[in-house]
Amino acid sequence: MELWLPKWSEMYLHVKWFTKDHTWIPQPMSQVINTSFLFWLGFTVIVLLLLAFFHDTLERIPFIRRIHEWLNLLKKQGQLILRIGLGLGLLLQLSTGTYLSPEFTPEAHWVDIVLIAAIAGLLHRKTLFISSTAILLLYIHATLVYGIFHTLDYLFYPGIVYYLYVCTTRWRATAAPILYISTGLSLAWLAMEKLTIAKLAHSLMHDYGIPTLGFSVEDFVLISAFIEMGLAWSFIVGFMNRFTSILLTGVFLMTTMVFGIKEIIGHTIIHTLLIMFLIEGSGDYKTPFQFHRSSILRGLFVAVNFCIFLFGLMALYIWMGQAAMACH
Image (cartoon, rainbow, N blue to C red; front, side, top):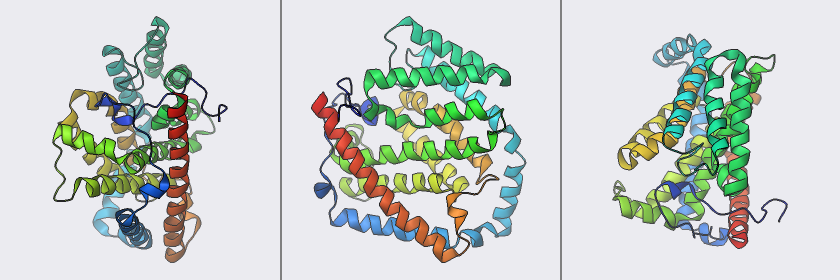
């Protein structure tokens, strides 16, 4: 266990941006899985099945096809969009005395220097490797200080590191897929927090008076978690990417109205990635979703592997969360 979670691993949660209580422990899977959980899991699987089955049909609708054609014309601007958005996000962090996340605060001046180097490296294509190296150093440092359990919330940063390293090389075709997968894993890891530590989200909703749209607080949190998992899985397997980007952008804009400036600082880089994904779409590479030509096989691939991924990730999250608290 110490190999994976050394003594410096502490349990910091994503909603730590907005709460001062960090003592929550993930519940055992036996307590997480109940009737409501199974109902919304089934509902999510059915939606994924239908979307996978009718994916090609939806893509052939003239209006949607024209939108895709227009967005495809902007694909060449993806790298520039990332440089601008990432630079803005890092600049906001620098100006607020943080790095990578609103709750990561520099313990030494060298962290600010590395952050400045990351921003400066974005000014030209030939210096992107400087930004990539700087962000990697900051991510490793954050992991050493705050623990791997928390920095897994921000797996999109390793994806950005990889993208910046290879986007000007012959490996650039792999940049977007890795960025999709790393962002999807980040979203999925955050969804685990809502599934296994639901009371933490309950307390946050109570503190901020967040409306539940007619659902009970418990069901609302559960629905939110499954929506997040479904969208994450969409990015990972590579289907409905543009729709997912639009939906996530809308969700984050709504949360910004509730949580304010800290949410803006925390999600500026995420918004940049979503704009990139909106333009990129499924890309020119073959996604896991496209491995099967049959709509039925695609649907089964998406649904069955979603369940395997969900329960596997949940088991890992619970184990790491409980181990992190034990170390703390």
